[in-house]
Image 1 (cartoon, rainbow, N blue to C red):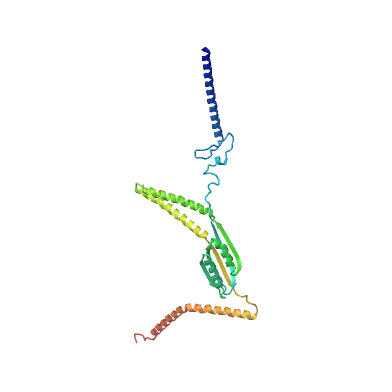
Image 2: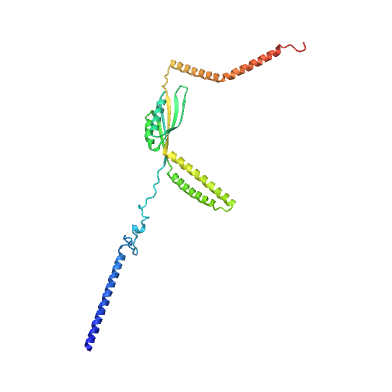
Length: 302
């Protein structure tokens, strides 16, 4: 009887020890699984991989150093458009009477490209030769092509091209404009909150100043837009006559031509002075007849 009791107690103890050992082994296995899960990348709640924690002295990875929304290359900076003002000057000479054809061809080139003639001035010298200047406005993308085409219309003496990059100024103007627009909106909201006349006047003064600055900045932006979208090309044309030969009779011919020009200028001056000459002659006649009539009257006492 005592021996049976001892056997039951021993068997019960062995079962309890086995259960405790099993529980201990299961607990260690779960802990190792957690450690391995934390040591690796694991899986996040959203289904993505969790980032590995940094160990002591370890450098951060690219993903850890730059979050998804701030990594280089993931969000490109706004591209700054290059804005360049380009101007050109072409000087050429042509034969007598050749300017008309050059002008027509230049107008055809510019009009076909979507440009226009901004200004034109011409004069004719004493030999009848034309000296003219055309100021052309052409689209910036067609500037080089039009300049090449115009240079083929006559004998080119010189060409000049100047460029000015205004990209930085344009970006600065746009930033100033946004700031002024925000200021304008702020003062507009304050107008409805003014409680006294003095506050209203003060807000109005600040608002007027901001709006004036905004208009100035917008005007400069509009000007730069026009200058960068359309380039300026100036064409200077001089007609040249044949060189005069030397010799006695050629000198005589030049002298007669100079005399004819002088007489023509004198006749033109007399033509403009003729009304004044006629008026002076009439006044002279009136004075003459009045004075003569006074001399012809007998004295009153006779």
